[in-house]
Amino acid sequence: DTGVSQDPRHKITKRGQNVTFRCDPISEHNRLYWYRQTLGQGPEFLTYFQNEAQLEKSRLLSDRFSAERPKGSFSTLEIQRTEQGDSAMYLCASAMGETQYFGPGTRLLVL
Amino acid sequence: SQELEQSPQSLIVQEGKNLTINCTSSKTLYGLYWYKQKYGEGLIFLMMLQKGGEEKSHEKITAKLDEKKQQSSLHITASQPSHAGIYLCGAGPGGSGNTGKLIFGQGTTLQVKP
Image (cartoon, rainbow over all chains, first blue to last red; front, side, top):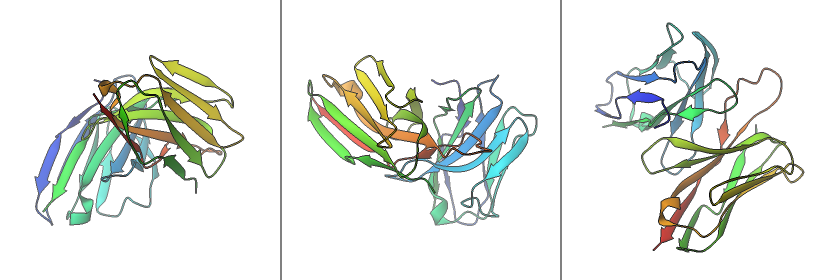
């Protein structure tokens, strides 16, 4: 257990539905990252927060994706109008220094 | 953009054997991270290397960074079934304004046969 938690661990949804994932970082960590990982690939960066400010978004993050970190603590990642291509593992990581600590991930399956 | 390539993509070894996984970058490395992932789970931090020639060890796992070759290697001595999993190398893209995001290789899947 790294101290980073994610909820839910698994989500099955139908195409077109909206889903929201939550990440609780290690409490003193001011940086929070979201990554997406598909089968057989390494994680790909989606977005980054420093405290409550979203400072970088990948081109992978289409308009259907939105992320928030309202009080600089937990973060949510919402996917609207899900598509089958959104099926993946969504990983959250937090950091204070140079090392990122990852949560267990949320596995999304879009039917 | 920077890319990391890992070799081999998969590896099956007999318990007790040594093995090496390589990670090669298309650009200069500004810090190199090694993580381990069990299937369907999150990433567990193993080691971070920052300087050329740096070598770190944790239990039976040793990692080295060769900056000139833009390459890192991960060596496991006397492998055990507990070493099985996916090994991922990650690196920051470097440059000014770096947010600390990591770019990862595609991973190396290791199976250790008892």
